[in-house]
Length: 200
Image 1: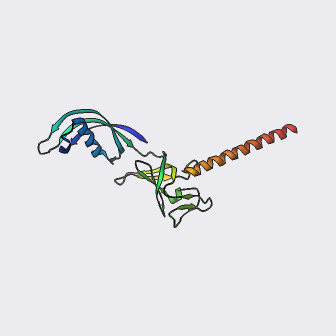
Image 2: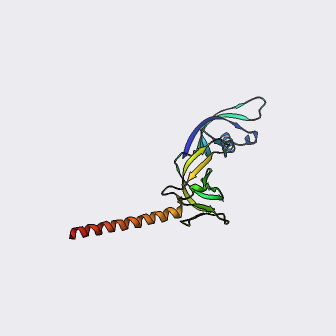
C-alpha cells in the first residue's frame, strides 16, 4: 500500500547547497538522502512530497554542514500481506518470474505463476502444459502478495497468480469472458427448463 508519511527529523545540509535558499537546499538534501531509502517501519520511500516546516539551523563544531529540524512528508510503499499488485514481468528464470511493481520487484515462484504444470522454455518463457498459456518478459500481470521478508537490505516479496482473477491481464480477460458465456448459457437453460415445466 502507498502511504503519505509525515517525518520529523534533523536534516544535515551539505555545504555544497549553501549557495541556495534554505528551503531549496533542504529540498535537494531530502531528495538525496531519501532516494531509494528503505526502512521496515516507514517502508520504501518513493519520493519527498512536501516540507511542512523548517526550524533554525545549527552548526556543530568540527562538521562543515548545517542541521535543520524539519517536518516533511514522504510518499512511501509498504507491501501488505494479501494486497493485490499490478506490474510488469521484468525477468523470467527457470524457477519463476520477477515482476516490477513500481517501487520494488516481487518474485513469483514457477509453481505460483498459473494453475497448471509449468515448464521453462528455451525462449525464456514459462508455459502451462494443459492450458498452453505463456508468460514472458513485458507481460502485464495482476498478482497477490503472499510473503514479505525484511531479512536483507531490500524486502523480499513473494507473489502468487494461482487464484481466480489473477494472472496475465489477457488471461484474466479471457476467464471473465468464459465465465460470462457460461453464466448466459446457464441462464438460458434455466429459462428453457422453466418454460418446459410450465407446459407440463
